[in-house]
Every structure is written in C-alpha cells, then in structure tokens.
Image 1 (cartoon, rainbow, N blue to C red):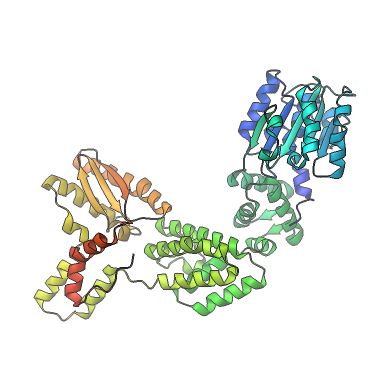
Image 2: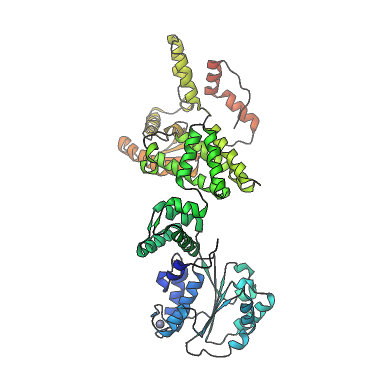
Amino acid sequence: MNMSYSVIARKWRPATFDEVIGQEAVIQTLKNSIAEGRIHHSLIFSGLRGTGKTSTARIYAKALNCKNGPTVEPCLECDACKEIAEGRDIDVMEIDAASNKGVDDIRNLKEIVQYPPIRDRYRVFIIDEVHMLSTHAFNALLKTIEEPPSYVVFILATTEPHKIPATIRSRCQIFEFKKIPPVQIIRHLKDICDKEGIDIEESALKLIVDASEGSMRDAQSLLDQIVSFSGGKITEEDVSIVLGVPDSTVFFKIFKAIVNDDRKSIVDILDKLEERNTDFVKFVLRLGEFFNNLLHAIVNNDKDFFPEELKEKKFSVEDVIRYLNVILQNERFVRESFNPRIAVELLLFKMVFASKVMPISELISKKKLINKTTTKTESEKLQNLNLDENQLKENHSDKGDDILNFVRKSFEDFEEIAPILRKAKLDLEGDIITVNLHPLPNSVKELIENKVFKSIEGNAHIKFQKRIKLNLEISGGNNNPVSESEKIANHPLVKKILEEFEGRIERIIK
Ligand SMILES: [Zn+2]
C-alpha cells in the first residue's frame, strides 16, 4: 500500500498542539516546558509511524520561532509559522536520515550549527528516521549534541528508539508517542468526512480504522484511496473491496452456513474471498471479532446487530462460545500455515462440528421424549436424573439454602446465559457466595460479573435485608489425569447416566 501521498493527511495535518490527537501526555509536557521557559535542546520523539511525531516536531518549531514566541499558541500567521508549516523555513531543517542527502546533511552538521539562525530565534533540526544513521553519522551527531550552541534544537524522530546509541539517548529528553486509540481515529475521520461532505457508513469507518492499526496517517491515506475509488458516498462494501478484507455481510453468511451445516456454501464463500485476494490471517482476526460481537448481541438482546432475516431468530449462547473457542484454538495454525486458506477452511469445518456436540441436558430431554410411555416409577427416575448435578453436592444450613436457592433461581432471569450459570457450583461462606464455573471467554466473564452478579446482589439485599457478595471463581484443568478420571466416573450425574442408558465409560475427552 502506498502511503506516500495523501491529500487528506496533508490537508488535515495538525497545526497547533491542541490539534494533535491521542498524544495528550507528550503534548502537555511540551507545553509546560515552553510555558515555563525550559526549552529542551535535544529531544527524541519515538513511536509508531503516523502517530504525529513529525507534525508535533513542526509545531514545537513554530512554538519556539513564532514572532510571538516562545509560546504554546503559535500565531500560524507570521512568516516563521507559515514557512515552518510548509517545510521551507531557512532556519528549520528537516533531514531524512534514510536518504543520501540526509547523510550528507548530517556530515555537514558540525559546520552548520556554528552559525546562528538567520531570521528565527532557534535553529531547529528535525531528523526523521534517525535510527537509520550509520555509526559514523551518529558520532558526528553526538559531537554536536554534546555541546550544542544555545540557539540549536534537535528533534530526533524514530520508530525504533533502541537503535539509537545510548550515548545519544542519555543526552536527550525522550517523548513516547502512543498508538492512537481507535475511538479517537474514528471521531477524527468522521469530523473530516463531515467537513469534506463525504457520506460514510459507520461500519466502513470502523473497517478503515481496524486496518490502520493506530496510525492516523495510514487511516487518512486509506480514506483518501477509498474516496478516489467510490466518490462522496462510501459503504462498508467499498472499503472491503479496497482493503481486501471481508465486510460483515460475509461473516453473517459464514455464520448461517455453519449453523445450517452447509459446507458447500463455506467453500464457495472462501473461493470468492480468495479471488478477491483476501488476507486470510487478517480474516481470522476479524472472524473472532465478529463472533465476539455476535455473543454480545445475543446476550444483550441487541437486534440491531443482525440483518433483517436473522432479527427474529434465536441463537444458542453455548454454541457461539464453542465457535469462539474453536477460533481461539486454531487462530495460530492459520497464522503459521503455509496455506492460510486451507487452514481457514479447516477451522470453519471444525466450527460446523462444534455445533453438533450435544449438551447433556439436551441428551437427557431427548431420552425423556423417547420414554414418553414409561411407567410412573420410571418417569420419576428421570425426574431425579434432571436434578442439577451441583444441587446433589451442595449441603448447607437452611438459611444458607434459602439464599443459594434464590441465587440459583435468579440465574434463570438471564435467559441467554442461564445454561452456563446452571452449571455453577455455589459455595456460601459468611456473606460471600463463590460461584465456581469452568473456563469462559473474557467477555462472558465480564458480563456475569458486571451485569448478572450486580443485579442478583441488589435483589438479594432487598429480599434478605442483608448484603451478600457474589464472587466468580474459574476452575478446571487438573494435571492429574488418574484422579480426574476417577472423579468423573464417580460423579453422581455420570453414574446416573450410565445406569439410565446402560452405558460404560469408553474414554474421557476434555
Ligand atoms: Zn507565528
């Protein structure tokens, strides 16, 4: 992708400290030093490409050299301000350390710094990609940085600060430019689109920002490319074509194919993506995001997430969690595979199979259906069988039982995740109830702790006139297979199932 030329990036380059986005700490420190008259003479700006290093360097140069300066608010109108913004101020020199000319400039540095600035207050050297300098050039630079004349300021910009010799680093004030948070890039791009009269879908913006990985310049360049591709109205599909990443409709198609065990559709979709030169490694990352968002949408009953034809359908949270697990477990294989396309196909097929695993509760209710005509005693037996496994194990005082039963009942209010919560082992000690569950995706954990627990704690307070606290505990993964197998074989529920279905344990799959 060619990032060298971007109309939007150039036009919307920040001109003042306050316009720099996502670098609050750096900007505040620079402003303070100017306001207090402590001018740094050697600065390192380190950070990812497109995070505002060179723009900030120019703003710093303007702040020092503005006719009203040094000031934290350069006027932007005097000759110095204008010429620095355009990169043609005679006293502010921008050197590209990666170019031949740059190397020559560094060689002549010692001589140049001897002369005071011609018009401005300070002679500023902005050295871009400074880590590209040779040892020889670094030595030349070191000599000038060691004893700089009072009118000289060096700003060394780099994406790889560790490649700058320690002798130079120790003489510089170091400023770290952070990856710009996605929300801030989205907000800024939206602002640009509004002002430029570009009509862009929110999902299209998100796709651009995902691809730009915290670099404002990349995000702006992508926006530029897409504008020249599709004009003033930009859809998610436009962006997906330009970037070679699938849009959300593709993920919904894949989701439907998995649910319907439609393996032919999966292959067809992948063929199309391959024709479009899709990057399958990125594809898997977005697939994971999609299923994570899907999980949130189901749990929060967010109908807006779904396309029209799926809005009224019910989906199983347990299935989606299983899909997510398959993605998490196989994502690395796709990344390392010599043929990511095949690895993705395999992953999607595994997801199809994952949805065929039948939960025990379902198995039992099927059995119940088959045995509809059973005698009374036998149906009673089944009644017992349906007793939750954990209720068999819990043994508490009456009062405690009331509270625990209340908590269990409350789980059912959260329809979508009740199947998970039902499996919890509860333990009451004092006013604290430990809810023990098997490993869960983080998003589900957060949901349980922030939504479910808070709500139950509130209701319990009203009902029992006392404060109880719910604590989530995750367990699982025993490294002693023998005792684990025994434990499983001796589990009351397992025993009952074996008895009921006249089965035996073949092997235990974790
Ligand atoms: Zn000015």
